[in-house]
Picture (cartoon, protein in one colour):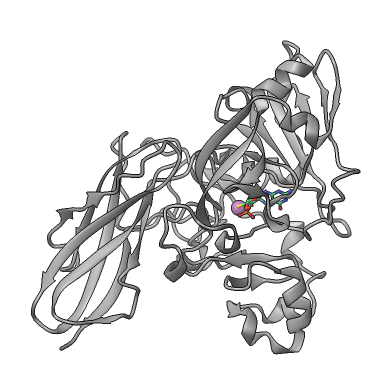
Length: 397
Ligand SMILES: Nc1nc2c(c(=O)[nH]1)N[C@H]1C(S)=C(S)[C@@H](COP(=O)(O)O)O[C@H]1N2
Ligand SMILES: [Mo]
């Protein structure tokens, strides 16, 4: 089995969301307009993201409705938001990036200095490891994402490798720990993540200040974030203020406990010991159907089906679709827009003449031969849901 993805549930400090008050408790997937009691507050914290589904408002966890995930590039105002603490209010004049630890020359860089370095652009499908968590059975604690904690954007920034070269990584440097300006409330641990040196030095790993031609939105990490292409979203640290080159894997909650997956297949509901967990890295092969929408009624005849498929660091080699509960599958046409790390659109036209209820399904395969499974790889934190996607439609004259 190729996948190295499975892990333990953080029975963790931040599950006690004592600091979630008011609207935070009411936030089981309400649209902003439905949050009347606190709408003024909500308007302020999710400004520019009003069309997203609110999964939590303190902190801001916002999911994109699949009905709006219908363009190859996800516009900034539709791009999902996920973080564990509150978004910090960064003053760009005071902001700086420090680079320290196992380096010859510790650095302090301003945004202008970073912008003066060679620019690199990557188009990346960024997905939260917990996307699809709501579908696991038995249920798993954590934000109950359905299908929209994912999006694709064009990021521009300086290469992490160039910044590290400027500082001069010592031979002892094996990981780069990344910290952002968000501060944990109370006893909650700080959100610090680390990336192994090989991936840190990859030419496509960047420190991004631009997203789809604009400065990063505040909720997506303004003024600077890491973008670690093809790896689960938690590597792409937002509001980045420090890179620390370290010798050993970072010893903190968000590396040692969270974002880990069992190293063997486990039974649904099974507890897994920490030593049987390995860090998540790349995303799993996955697809979703965005047309027709689940629950749609369509006329008999030609039914267009479409969606997106991605596979982290791998490329999509095909997407098969079905309209008969998976009895037969047909290869969909892949879209022309193709970039490493970015999702690919797929399209198919069914001819459904008999009225009735139909399940349309999509199943992606990547260039390593990984295929979306029929059943989930249950894991205690509910990561990497990638079961064959399905929508039920009603064909009616
Ligand atoms: N500083 C900081 N960066 C962070 C996080 C966080 O809590 N704090 N959350 C991570 C997680 S879990 C994900 S999935 C991505 C989401 O990026 P987005 O909010 O731009 O969609 O940001 C990552 N970067
Ligand atoms: Mo995430």
